Length: 161
Length: 161
DNA sequence: TTAAACCTGAGTAATTTACTTGGTTATATA
DNA sequence: TATATAACCAAGTAAATTACTCAGGTTTAA
Image (tube, rainbow over all chains, first blue to last red; front, side):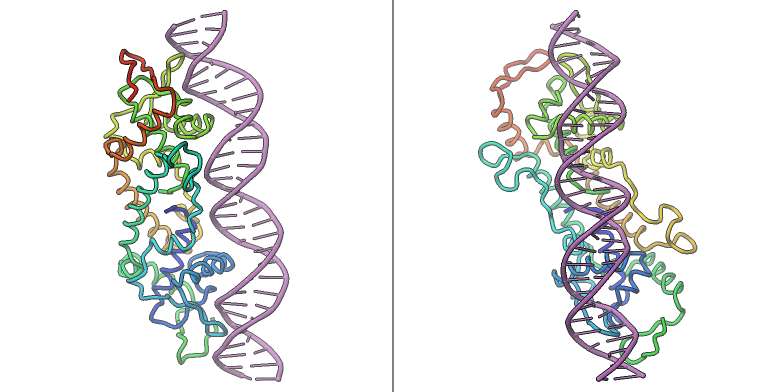
């Protein structure tokens, strides 16, 4: 479990999706505007998220992304794992550097520590984050910054955003 | 709180130090041999650890490094923080990208999450790790791999574990 | 006095991150 | 059917980070 800004980008984007979960598909362009992440970078991240079935996509006009499951069943750990794809920088990936029977202080210790961090992050869902007051407040301010009126996918088409 | 292999190197090295805590100063060359980390890289890591007073050094022949404090008062979080030196890759370090009053969903969320991870890692000390059976066993095997006889600074030389 | 250790700084290859450019494919609406 | 819109895809790239190497120091104890 690596914790870097890449994972933060993914969690932020997924949180944006969760905040608009009851509305229609969410466009990457919208996430890009609201969260300040480049569109093409988002596309790359969402390719990975889609592979892990954390999101589903709708192509064409009015399309975008949906969460693959309910917000409270998607953990922060899953999202981070989806984009980090464990490059396993251990120097003993099974039977590497260490002599004799795969002995390696480093490996076991770190796997164990990061497993515990993972367990912790697994206990936090996107649903939990959406409930938080501070996040709701920031999300509302973000909505204000754009056009005061928002549109959904179903019936209102005149989206001149 | 970033979790990468760099931090793992630092924790591993500090753990090696903790395992030899009752013996004399521990040489970096010894850590390099046992843990498979390049000597010069260790020197760089230890320069940072020393700056944070997590270790003290003894120069000259027979010299090496000591833990700066007792093993059970040094947390894993401290060690990682010492070498990662928070490069703050946030795009709104105070009042950056976000419009109006420093609003930023990303920043607050991530700081909060990583604070909780930090709190978790802060609850684990080097002393805790040293107590673990699996780590003691690996450490003993590492000692076997080198010369069967080790020497310490003070008096007890014949500790072939 | 000399060797063992720490210390410093510069350089560097490999990797990752964060992004750009330039497309294609699918689909809703006019 | 044309067109706009959005997801999808691939390749390249600049900047940063990681994990080193190298080449010299300085300090201190045997």
